[in-house]
Image (cartoon, rainbow, N blue to C red; front, side):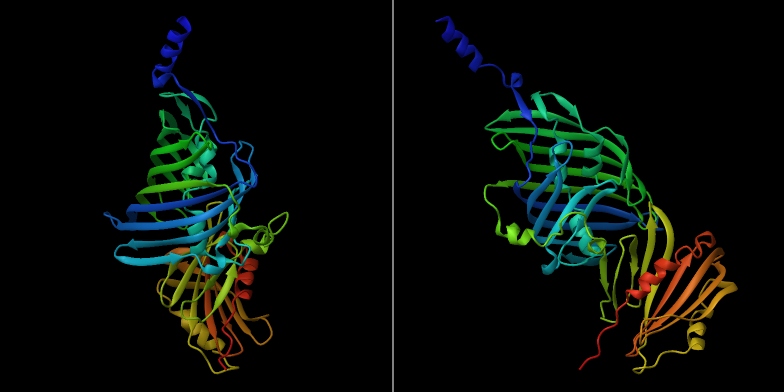
Length: 434
């Protein structure tokens, strides 16, 4: 009778006395399927006191294979195949849409000393495609959100700074006050919340963040299967991005796959390089919307502006602005011909706000066979600020022409020449129509 009474008492013990192991022991070769839905609302602070209203939505669906774990037992390297990756953004009434190209849906993501590297083994991504796959919620961090120990209902844990950094998409973290709480355990699942504030650097700008999230942990598979993550950011202006106040909400679902998906079969995995990632794999591609030119370029160059006539990119290293480049396609000349040096120099002699003081270089420079490249370097003031400007006119054998203007501070002058040469050398004009 005493034993029976003890059994009854134990079976009716309150739920809050339960303890569960809240942690994931990920293994290489494990497969997951993810679905993520993102909604963003807020404003960009671009010279107006009220700011420009911003709305965005994104959808991602992909399968993932864990290639390696990190020191904490979470995912360190993964390969993915996206069934869907697209977004729409409306800024100040102007709408834009992005979608991952069908021939770039196989990707790699891996932790490095400087963050997380993303690339496709099928060829260079565009900047928009890179942002699509690199800036959705970091699923590799899921295991790091948990305490990885036995815990009771009502108990809390502090998130590690590394987990907070990746979850909040910081480049660096300066303050971390995120904490998790086990809310309940019933019907084979544990429910938890994560809340608090953090501060760090995002897109080279100081950012203050507040998080309110909830998740579901499946006790049978020992994996997080659902996560709702709401994050409010107050971000300052960066070297290649405006200040912003935004709230983003992510709804994530995750399923453990018992069988290998065909999208990541052994024959597919052979497309990835063995060992270190080749430098060429990290290059990005850009194609003029009207087909006037294209080029591939290193990721340090960031696109910051685009019109029907101009493309503006900035060289940013370790959150420091180095130089700005503007590319503008010129009217096509007859095959085998191009504008004269005098015509080219006349085009920028009367640029608004430009006060030339000293010409440092003026003449044709070496170009690929069949091409012509003219360069003018000058010191002066642009809108009252001392700068070094370099003007290039690059022409192809079929009459295609593009003007490239580089602006840098005098102390950076000459230090970007090799980078400029690489950028110009990568420009490809369209083949002649037959």
